Image 1 (tube, rainbow, N blue to C red):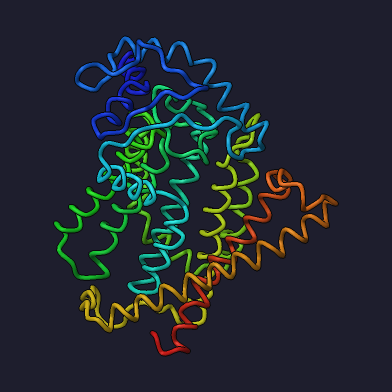
Image 2 (tube, rainbow, N blue to C red; image 1 turned 90 degrees about the vertical axis):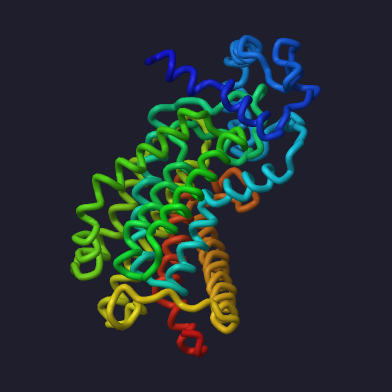
Length: 402
């Protein structure tokens, strides 16, 4: 078993998958590739060559991943990335798009679209699941501290999260949890063919998982563990979803818990010896969840939840030209409202925090300090959650779009 786990966590399988999909690492001046890892006649590196390369770069790469973020404050690495060649552009763009389906920015726009155009109930439930699995996944990363695949021999197509640890893959966790939670929750709310839903959920979650191998950001073990952890979490919490929904909407202490618990979880988040985006991303996710939770509670108290009227499940709307245009207008206005909220609250909160701590706004590294980053992101994204759940649909009503 230990040998199997080591094999699944190694870079060799990632390299093989990338080359099967037409992605090849080229020599770079600062990362010269030895003959032992050069492709064989069929386009693959031999296992022995990859293993030798891993051994050679193990210490060097780990220091590189940590030290470049200490020196740059988490920004772009000092050295440029190794160059690569794409031989299958269809798969390249497919996996880049699929990887985007697991980023926080996608969920912060995709989930509100469900609220604005389909059912706020489903949006609320998915936000709750998303916050839960992402917090657990991010904490596990920084507790286990298992490295990402080595580059070289792996081609890494993303740099922002390269200082983060690898296991589990939170992309795999989020996509598995979100798509299958939607599949479990939607039948009681909307009418659709369940088999088609299963096919879509399996396809989308699989593409996201495979994209993490293609982009070189995770090992096979990272992805498998991420998906399995989400399946386990969904299985364990599913019997209590209805009870949690009821408490979240009706309990008088729900708004207090929705704000205090995320703040507590953020401040007990594991500390690292170098800057990583995990703490900031975790704050963003929990803050969105907190704002949405308070907003949905407020809507329930006001008696205006914007949920579908009539007997459930309701039929899906017919996709006429008018419906599509209205949905597009809602999306554009809604995203504009969220972006404006983000810009305003971020600017104001940073000014207050800079003044409070007496630091210069010209120092780019200041934003990464815990006492600046956490309250700024929490205030900003809690506001986004509140605007999404309370104000945007009321804006649509005033404009005759709802």
